[in-house]
Length: 298
Image (cartoon, rainbow, N blue to C red):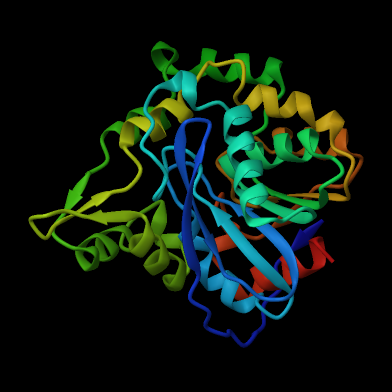
């Protein structure tokens, strides 16, 4: 099924409340956009942060109380580069710890890429708490396909991990970083509001006036290149335990294998939906994203 809808929704500005808890011995940060609607927990892709959802939270403020969580090693959460501490199971525990801290018992979930893989585990671990689940290019992979993927890499190393380690850590200022990211792949496809939000929350200020990536490139690389048993294949294995209404979406121009997402949908007993765009399709067109979320999590 293909969805390429367009249109407009009025955005309402709401500055999120930032917080941080100690989860599993680590500091885990979150953004709470508030509101009286049903809680919606949003989880970001590898290397990004909860703040990139800010423009979408503004559009959805009439329907949801959105809470975004900086997965461990990302955003304002504590830096973690040890691959052994970056499992999807540990990240799912962090998510539930934040929600317990906020007193949120029942909630819907939206996860993109890595965030989708973690959302699956949360839904499996807490079936009585998750009302509905929306997966956008979730990284949850059948073990057989995962093995074939690694065999295809030169030297067995994921090129995304190689690229992550080459990322520029320090920039003169946020404006310079935003201009550079917006001029070239892969972030040039992001809606300008999303890119601005990512640069706002995805960098930290340094004493000398420069800014630095909040997510250590080694963290991003470790997640991309992991062979740990509690990563993408673990999330795929937990799909069979998900009991809530779920949806699986992926981009028409994805650089990943569509078979991954069809397998996810098959396990969940739903039909995968193809949306015009690439891996970050949810963040390419915010008006469309607004409608997709409302439809999937109605």
